[in-house]
Image 1: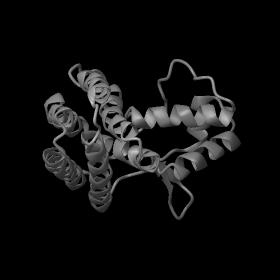
Image 2 (image 1 turned 60 degrees about the horizontal axis):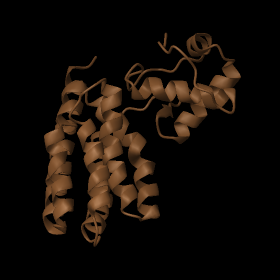
Image 3 (image 1 turned 45 degrees about the horizontal axis):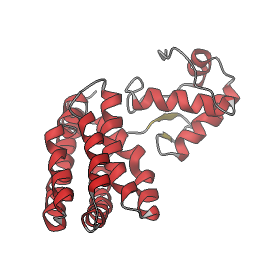
Length: 225
């Protein structure tokens, strides 16, 4: 397996650097879901010892990006239909709370300005990995600006699964879900302080994204080997 990465980011330890490289490759789609993370080829490709690679793989498992089977083989996590449904149920709950808190603010100008800046990034598609960053940063910013730290921590806890799910569904489905027009009304409702309308829109927003991803993932499974 060859990972095309031009430079290694500076990290405290070699293990952390290795984790970062693998995480980037998974998030960028260079290592697809279900791929066996073979120790020998990966340690050679990354220029690290197998002991360091094992530590990195354990970290990826803790983050929910990789899983180990009964034979000890580690692979990039594949997402089940049930996990997609559970993910969007939790996301809807968290982001509805965030939106309601934002709509209740007496002065929403700075919040709207920041969300508009995040939203504008969705107007300019780049690579799939960069666009996924922009999409998740928009939703994450809503949670951060809500001022509820526990809510933000909960959202950050599922953000890796959200990214893996989008990647697993394929680029067409992912880009359809990341469209600017699907997100712009959220900012408009927050600007007006209309919590009820924003909550209703988020419910439709999450349901349509969930259904699109499930359809794509189900279709991929049917035509797979």
